[in-house]
Length: 76
Image (cartoon, rainbow, N blue to C red; front, side, top):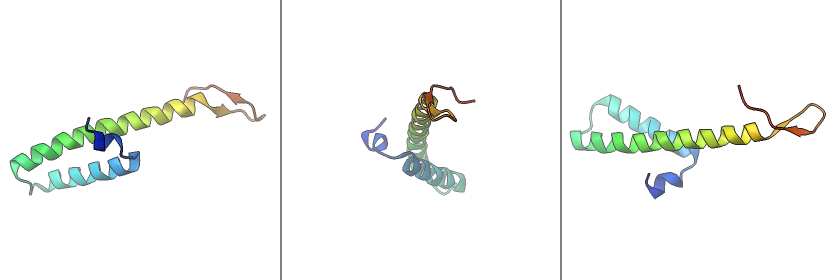
């Protein structure tokens, strides 16, 4: 994955991925541009999935009980 993708926040990566999908669905890209966009989109999707997995792991690791103590609890 390219370094510039790794530096993107989840929200920025998702926004760019959505734009790529719209462009590809529009069918107005030249073949080579469409292939390049698809490759970047695949990398952005992978980045977004990794960011979501990290966030889920953090939530699973810290769950506050009603009495204020912290407990590890997996998300459903």
